[in-house]
Image: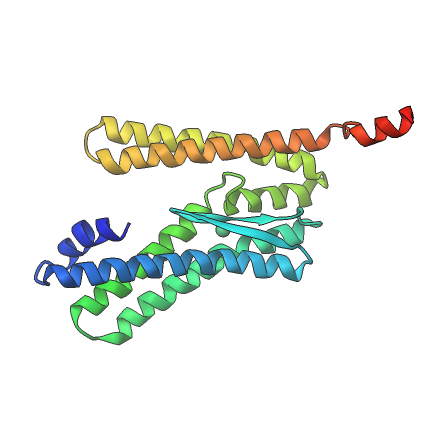
Amino acid sequence: MASSLALVYFPRALPAAPPVVHWAWGVGSALLLFVSLVAHELAHALTAQRYGIRVESITLHLLGGVSQMVEEPSTPRAELLIAAAGPVMSFALAGMAFGGRAVAGGPVSVLVLFGYVGAANLVIAVFNLLPGYPLDGGRLVRASLWAWRGSFDWATRVASMIGRVTGLMLAGFGAANAAAGGELISGLWLVMVGIFVHQSARAAGRLAEIRERPAPVEVEQIEEHVA
Ligand SMILES: [Zn+2]
């Protein structure tokens, strides 16, 4: 991450600066990206905590993260606010970075860094708002469906289906873009994101199906009966 920033992004953004600046900015902006992702996930976690839901762990990946909550939110309202907290935080950070760039007025290298952080947070917010459950956008869809029909399991199933369709559409759009020859890298990248969204939605839907089935009899219970 830091090396692609240092070798590709900053040499393009700051062609006059020496490589040492590209590397310093590459490492610095990778750290800022990391902080941005943590802030996004912390916003989810702190909101979840307000609703009495413990967050066991936070896993970060390239465009976001997953807050592993020990239980599902108990109301659509809680789900909605927990899901919205992350993108709201990312939009706020993007606004602060772009605002900082506007008022900083310093050397161009500083402005480029502000611009990078702003753009990165904007991408994080928009990506996570894709309506593919279990992404934040998909959770917002589920919360709305849940509030509408009152069934958590039905809402999860429909949100999972919408997520799978969203993933396939993204992948298809990316593939078409790559095939057209214009944007090969970003096209292929979109295919990967689409497959990721599709697979996550499918896995989340399966999990909901398993939860819906009657709980299997525990081995201990059987033993108790035998004894
Ligand atoms: Zn999020």
